[in-house]
Length: 256
Image 1 (cartoon, one colour):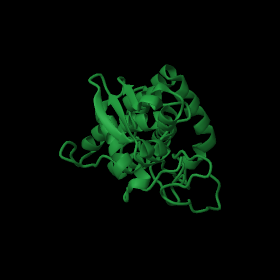
Image 2 (image 1 turned 90 degrees about the horizontal axis):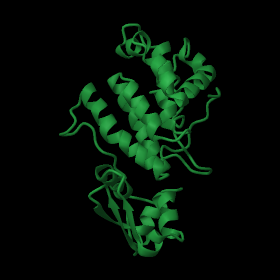
Image 3 (image 1 turned 90 degrees about the vertical axis):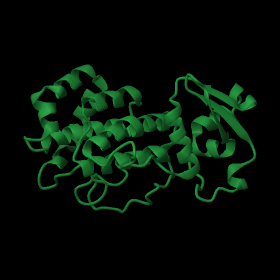
Image 4 (image 1 turned 60 degrees about the vertical axis):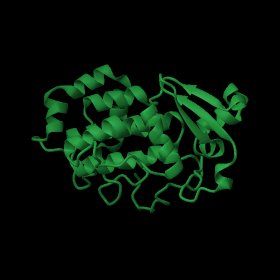
């Protein structure tokens, strides 16, 4: 679903109807412009513009969702801004990034995916790639397990986790902390046994793209552009006819 402009919100874009969403066990109230919300999300479009109770009353209750994460979602809908890193709560360090990615960005991705907001998911995937590359890290066992528990089977976050595991095994040096954990500590074997969907993805992606991780290509899933990347939209989800927020991807002679 195409996203409306966000930096010049006028009466036409916002509309004149308001809906209220109560979030979390304490039911924190969010008052939101219906038109803007529905144009951002097909999930809310069906809920509020369809023949459901929520549409008739203009009220929705989501007791199972986290109010803090929903607050970040609404901030993006109105301002097109993601949570910032570094910040007063998350220092500019490897540990700071890992904590920020796991406690703030991952839950926001899960929520955006659940509510069918492709553009937000895609922008968060960009942040994951950039942050992991900058910090020299890869998803660990806990992050991979959580990603597979909280996403659907075609999620690009799942794909990223599986691809980064392949990269870790194939390319990261023997002294790498992540390679030691995955290989020597037996975490890969544990993942393959405990998470069948991961085992399937790992096997298929290894067979399909494994050669890309070896010389001379040395492709890194964290890179979004350049000869060592899989392309800017490899970990994006786009509906038919939807233009990426990064613009059209440049054509390359080599198929990915």
